[in-house]
Length: 114
Length: 113
Image 1 (cartoon, rainbow over the protein chains, first blue to last red):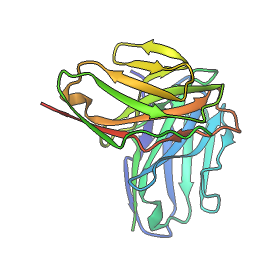
Image 2: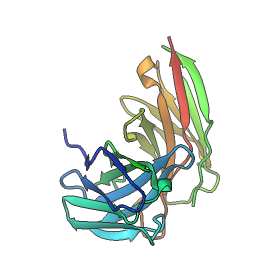
Image 3: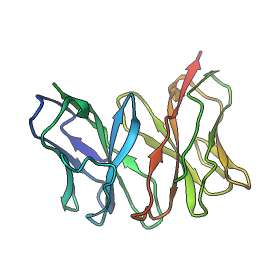
Image 4: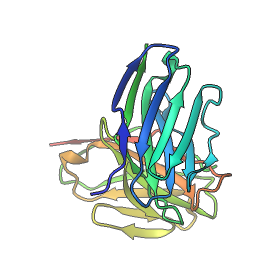
């Protein structure tokens, strides 16, 4: 049963520290999405990639957030420096693309910035 | 961008059919309608997707009227395990760089014995 994996599952850090979250998409999927979920804002799309190229990252605060896909099996989301308002659950999802737009979500990384 | 509107919450009982309606008045010609289910501490899970009329799979049905300005997710004979948040998502196929994927606030469905 292929699944999207995310690490770490939980992260507690102090304000100002760098945070790196990793995602392994389902093998063969060429589209990767990063979301942030909070009680106040719900699910927000931060960025998405197709064939490792960023297609849209307009939902991401550019001054502190960055997203990359070093290779087809790894997507990263970095926050530097982190702030308490970044506390949220960050989800990665992958999809087949090419008209098949079902997104398969990972378990999420629960981030708490103190 | 097709914004969606759903009821914040719904309650039902085991064995009943539940219908959750989503409004998307500004849906574009190329937009598809997708529903996701989310349990606490988990990521959303795909339920069903459709473009027009009716789509049915092993867990749900999706009804879309001709004007496509709304859609209804139908869950037959719900059980306690169907208690979750349900999201309606409208987006164009291909997710071009000009499109945006917007999850609404979702509908919190509570099933009682």
